[in-house]
Length: 151
Image 1 (spheres, one colour):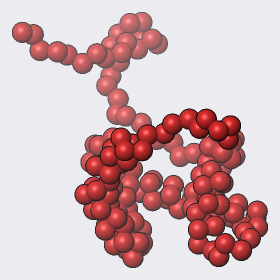
Image 2 (tube, one colour):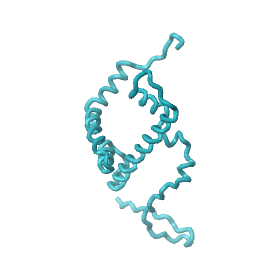
Image 3 (spheres, helix red, strand yellow):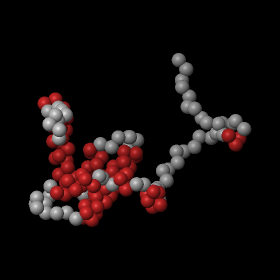
Image 4 (cartoon, helix red, strand yellow):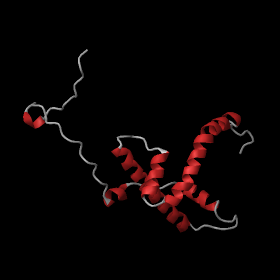
């Protein structure tokens, strides 16, 4: 069987001659202008999810101002992007395409968030130990059914 050869594109400016192989270009950083062009909902976690988590941390009678929710929304979204970017860089260096839990833990440690990483190691271990089986069982035991009482 013949060995497969890589396909090399032809150089259009050189009348069909083969182009010299080139290194893969480095990714170009996103400018502030390009970031501004993204819709807010594409850059931030959903405000309803952030508000629900915040409400769980305060007494039931407490109110949370809209600007406080928006501030936390921006902060946690930036934090997640910061950690994920570091983890993605590690994966790229190791020629992997999937970011795993250990990559996030590594990134947190590398960026000085060791205290959080230690707690998350425990949660990741529990998730792997119980999470898959529990989520599958919960779906089988408690299927979502439509309500018939008009609500």
